[in-house]
Image: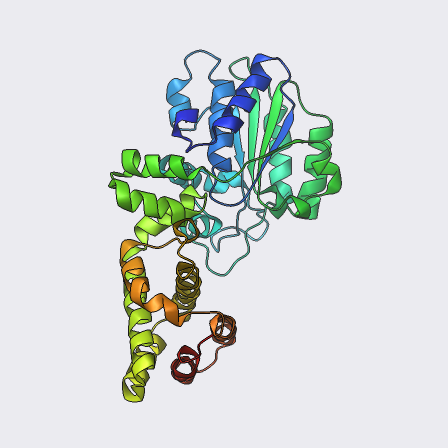
Amino acid sequence: MTFNEVIGQKEVKERLMQMVSEGRLPHAIMLCGPQGVGKKALATAFACYLLGKSHNVEVMLQKLEHPDLHFTFPTIKLPSMGSEHIPVSDDFIKEWRELMLQSPYFSMDEWMTAIGAENQQAIITAGESDELVRKLSLKSSQGGYKVSVVWLPERMNIACANKLLKLIEEPPQQTVFIMVCEEPDKLLDTIRSRVQRIDVKKVETGAIQQALVERRGVSEEPARRIARLANGSWQKALEELQVGSENEQFLELFISLMRLAYQRKVKDLRKWSETLASFGREKQKRFLEFFLRMVRENFMYNFQQADLCYMTQKEEDFAHNFARFINEANVLAIYDLANRSIRDIGQNANAKILFFDFALQMIVLLIKVP
């Protein structure tokens, strides 16, 4: 993997390469930032950059199979594993490489799906640090660096964290640790104090738009809107491409709710609520999150500031005539209603009753004017 495959992040790329060229590469780096901005991609590209200085390694790096490149990531215990077996990253390295080669911009949920996890909590075990000690104590196979990429070190259990701390304090010769962290406050203070932290900011909207056009074949206008909706996350941009059909369904349900509530068609609103009740609970929550976004965007649309609005063309077409009904007299109450509904769904409330009551309350809220 190369830096060319990382979306945006020019400043971080240059900083990493400059550290090498100036001979001041620290033995432990921690890339911190929100999900989807390319930390994992940057870490892997930098690892390949360091290892690529050796000869005849291009094929190995393309497959992420270089013997001096070690990946550490959260794992689970599968039913097929023996009772004494402690899960380590090597147990899932095939799935890891496959997902990384598809795209390094994947979430924990996608990783859990890839390894067949159900309701387990993925962690980095103490067995993982023992494996790292063993691997990194070996001499470099190519005579260069040995690189350890650790994804989400905040998921280490305490035993693993303490062992990794000792390894960072006394690193083997020519070893570089590159950590990819989203919640650094959950790490031991002693680990944070021994790594050089580099904050990775959101991806520039223009870089996301350009990547959508060049890499995904999206036309200019949809790419512009998706890039703005992504809010600095390439991962979010990819999700927008994948969930387009579901969002279109949610938009139709949103439009239907608002029109029926405005017209006070109670019988039709009951049918609407039964449609929502037929969804699974996760999809019901996704609809309500979509609903909240639409409320926010329509409220902002009233200010006639295009830079403050993040909508698709279809969403904006509806907002053109509807937005005035979401105003300072009702926006907070509508927000509270949706958030309470999300909470109640999580507590297994009766969905038919919940969504019918939701629809009836919208009748009252829509007639409020400032």
